[in-house]
Image 1 (cartoon, rainbow, N blue to C red):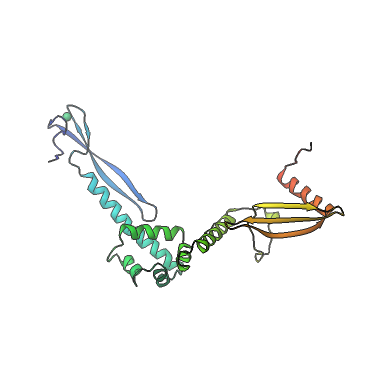
Image 2: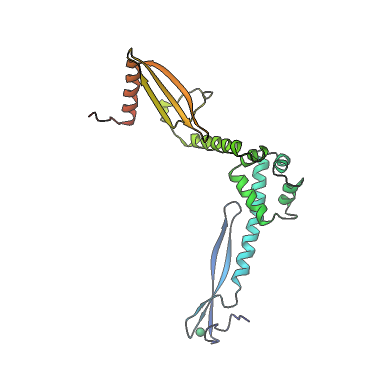
Amino acid sequence: MPNENICPLCSFDQISHETRLEKVSNHFGGHKEILLAYDTCQRCGTDGDFANKNGALIREAIDSLRVESVKTILQYFSDNKVNLAGMERALELPQRTLAKWKRGSPPPSAAGVALLRFLRLFPWLVDVANYNFDSEEGQQIHIKAAIDTLLTKINFKENQKTDNNLIPAIWVDSLCLETRPDGVSSLSFSTLLPEKEMEQVRLMVGKDQLKAMIDLLCENLNYYPVKD
Ligand SMILES: [Zn+2]
């Protein structure tokens, strides 16, 4: 039987006791400080938690933060007008499962908590479920969500920003440029999709306008390719 007053190594009974404040965190549930025991044998110097009390304290803190995190995530869904009933239908959860989880009776299983965390981070997973987990639809939903997120992170200089928010921004992976002997040039932008490369925009311009555009690009990027 582990005893905090007996050294587990040499069985000496003069043990010094100390407690240390440790932090347990959960990304969605916040954090909690707990006092953990540290015992040291005065003869051989062995140290640790001789009575094995810390494990239960840590588990208790983790469990209570998990309950908090479930409440926080479900409150976030409510605040953001996410339809919980629709979510339950898409994921084939029994009715009112999420409301019950929010009340904590019964609390979600570990698998349920993992599901909630994924939904909080990737809300579009519900759309994937609505398309019956179809692989192609799922990929398109994923790519669209990724591009939308990416676009919010790109900061353009004020003078390069367009004021028209209605213009859709598209993601471009490749550029194709062709010129005809009479100077008419074609410049096209394509996106690489899992199925194929898809041309998104094609511009027809005169060679001089094209050169002016390229000059503008070089100037802004401070990049002037060296000619052979
Ligand atoms: Zn000892």
